[in-house]
Length: 70
Image 1: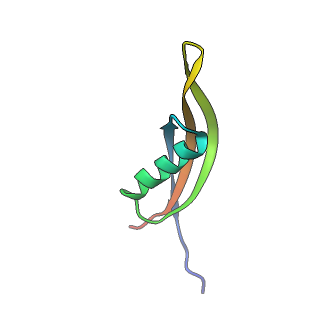
Image 2: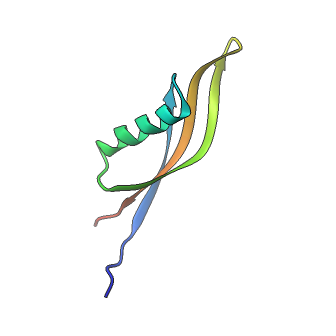
Image 3: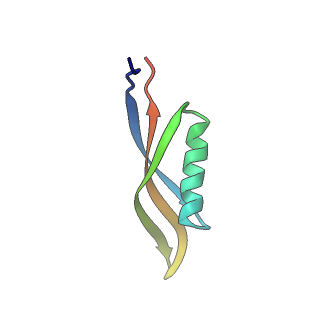
């Protein structure tokens, strides 16, 4: 009989001065230090922080899932 699993989904915003990819990577790596068993990262939204007409940060909203353990 297959094992049943439950997964929890959290939403985060990562930021980087370099790129959207770097923002996502930083968010996942930081979260993995505090949350075990990360499984899937889904980019939900991307945006830019603009100051004085210049891009100063890349931001990504990410949904991360991990196996729920009671």
